[in-house]
Length: 295
Image (cartoon, rainbow, N blue to C red; front, side):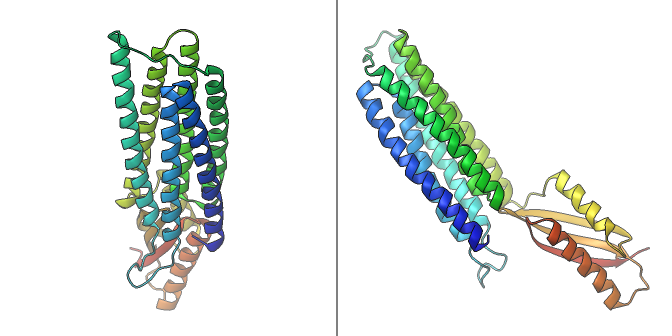
């Protein structure tokens, strides 16, 4: 990651942390005063969003370091490590909220005591403002993630989206309480749990794929093959392998060329293929080209 991209990532994430912690404080205070389990659950989710954003900041900055003797292929996978940590934290938070919500639903359904909610209007307003803020954060972070091709930043963007959707559940739960259905507040907490766990699973799956050298998408592979075939002197593609390395891709290619060419001429063809691939695909960190004599 270039220094300019690193500055963009840090700027976006620092703003995200500040907004998340402000939202957490407001949601938690109003949730306690109003007696809304859904709003308190949403506050906990927002707090986890802020905490995981700090992890993303650390991961992105470490991933942006240049190659060294100990990490000769670079540090890009630290973004994937940050995403994995984020997924685990999200899953723990999600299951915790789900457990509390199920316990409260069972308690109410058995005729247990339920503390009436107060300040419903204030709680609804805060929930609405949170939805708007988190949705804006999603689009803001997503745009930056696409611009600098950061998987950790994109994971954080989707975390914000899940928080927005979860707060929609809180909003409906509070509205249900106001309409005389107190159990809906706990049901909303259960909905929030589902959104959080689903987001955690998606982030974990994507990060895992980046850690185990998964090949790039068929669409990217098709574009690579088309570009390579267009280069002068290339008579065919014998082998092409790709592996995802954090937010980057490594490409190994074996091309076929005229066997009567000199070493210098064959090397020039390979060099042209190498330069064309790295120029056309910004996500390619390195391209290795081997030349075979055409049969």
